[in-house]
Length: 162
Ligand code: ADP
Image 1 (cartoon, rainbow, N blue to C red):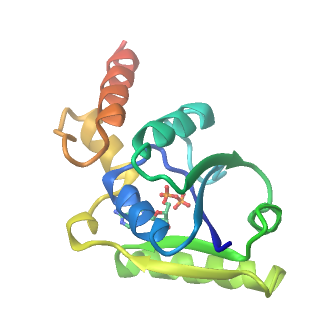
Image 2 (image 1 turned 120 degrees about the vertical axis):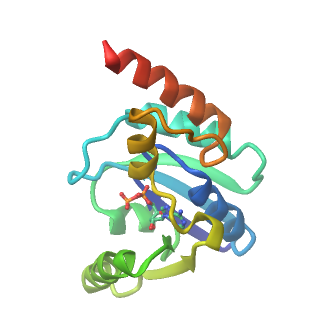
């Protein structure tokens, strides 16, 4: 069985992430989307909320599993009985970071392969941080994120105004 792990913060999941999940799920028997704690980012949503929003947004993909983890990605990937990591790539600016990450992972564990998927052109501008910024200043996020995410962000932004 071909298994791949797609790790990320997903704070929150966007239609750009979903596009990568849909395409990657056609390439593997099982795609494990794993929410991880990125110490460099202060999240808007808790791990549990991110898992919930991902689960609700990916109901239409039969061979997907949503999970979360903390710790070393290499260990997690091996625990899932695979050696494949899938990451999405947008602009050149992503490349620098992803390149370093992939090499570091390979240095620790040479068996692990990071596979990159190019973003679809309509999502190349889309990022979780961009969505949060847009929402904070009252911009429209409809069509950029799944509906459950749109509703949750609006709810959260209203609460944080007080
Ligand atoms: P991280 O904190 O690990 O960067 P993100 O949730 O921001 O996690 O992103 C997870 C993965 O999805 C990364 O590989 C990122 O490059 C990719 N990604 C994010 N937005 C898009 C998009 N619009 N199109 C394609 N890939 C994307």
